[in-house]
Image (cartoon, rainbow, N blue to C red; front, top):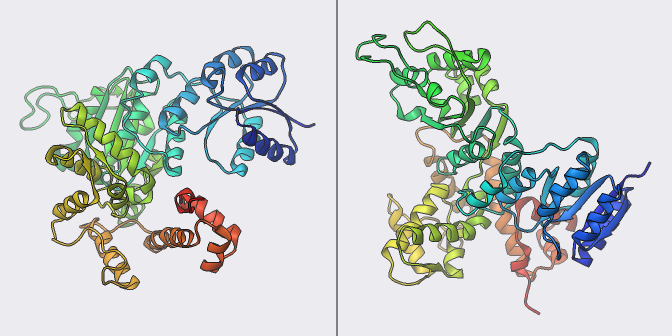
Length: 485
């Protein structure tokens, strides 16, 4: 029996394309251009799934969603939005949407999501709408790249659960920001958020810091101490740099995860652990397991929901939004308003950012404080990037600077490896190098052909379908390659 999709979008062209795709997939489609028409169809009991743009001419879909869920709680609703922020994902979940699709999206992605929506019952979210509105301007996660969109969707889904989350990523990518977002929009948000960095505490004190100790349990224990587990009761415990936890503490932590209780150092009475665990690391835990310095059983207990934060060099399209955010922060701290011109932004996008988002934030704050010009140009950015280097070398060797491609790759790899010292980087360097070369190669071909993908594919020696797939997977913005009419 054919299933019916209720489609709402005020753009005639988008409605036509989506209607044709859904009908080819075997669905019946009832399309509309307003929220009022969509509401009449829902209230009349029509449709098996809703696909709606957030912004409709007469009403926002987020305002309509609660009414739809009230009259038809089992009707899955998929929302589409060009405003691709974490707040869109969380608001969609809070209002009861099955999921959201950031525009632009692949038609196959929509069809897959419609299929899943028809198979699964939607789950409601409990995040306060008033609280979302209050905090939307202060939320620290910034970016509209495809990789960040997926992270937003994971966070939105995980706000409903107490599942343990493992966040991995290089230093400076924002692991604690993700942990805080998971806590701030969860059912534990009224409880404490307690963070502990394993790498910053002497190994002999970690167990006491985590689990607390009784008076007299060791030399210097002059009074009872409530550890991080006890401080985090009813809330979230963030275990940062979990790869640096000593084996003895790993054993005790595993026992807590298995039994749901712990004892203080020197104590005898178990204490129930009412906390959600979020762990983070920049290290390769599987490699540590192979070396015998990290417990495999603990790894699987912690890695229930893995979240990988991409380094900034893998989401360079987010730099402009990040710069705007950090400039706003600088103004809030009393610094004068600055803007970065287009050349400055493009220079930032050519840098490799070994310090990731944290390094970009420091650079923007430094420029806001030191430079007197209201408009920051590429020369100022170049000067700051060079001055920030400790080795006196340019921040990036670029094509045309007396270096062939092989030498450039060697130079880049040396710096990449150096950023992980004294540890080795995670596996997959070969694929990472390929990605680093492939994206600018495709972009250069598109620029050379004025955005003509057929000619660019011929230039690259690949077919057009392969080129389109790589453009999508690499997140290449083709609009900037088109020649003006």
